[in-house]
Length: 211
Image 1 (cartoon, rainbow, N blue to C red):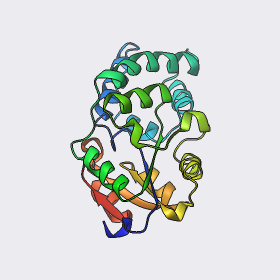
Image 2 (image 1 turned 120 degrees about the vertical axis):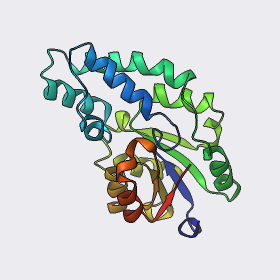
Image 3 (image 1 turned 90 degrees about the vertical axis):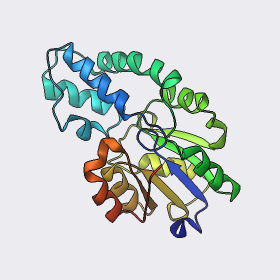
């Protein structure tokens, strides 16, 4: 925990970091594309992983030449996911203990996610950790995905802290690189759905953890 010794804030990604949830998106993507006679390409989830919600919808429409609006895709995705986030998805095994440990040291906690607030908040409440966080920031509300640092900067600003005073916890290499360039301490988080890039995530982060 040496790199976290002096931090005052910790900003957590949701999917694949706090929650064991990326399986649900893989399933949603599979079912969504299967309805349209399309198999999920190997690089699809990686490509949309850091995108803001509408950005991912635009990308999907363009990539597969769909005769649908981004808004229609977003509505369908939301309908498929909201129920799962509110009742099915669970925290990774060591998350609750880790969050409590940070809080006991006076570290302020926040969430920065590409999920919508309608998905994020019920999931945190259902798992009994919502009250541990000072704020939730979403790329959907910011209007930029995690290829840009805006969602992390917004979370830090709400905590009243500078980027250098905060650690960003992420399972995505792209997101970690974004946070690093913006001046945050970076903590890579292992997730089985991005296991193939785990060694790279570990090498390019200030710290690496397995929840």
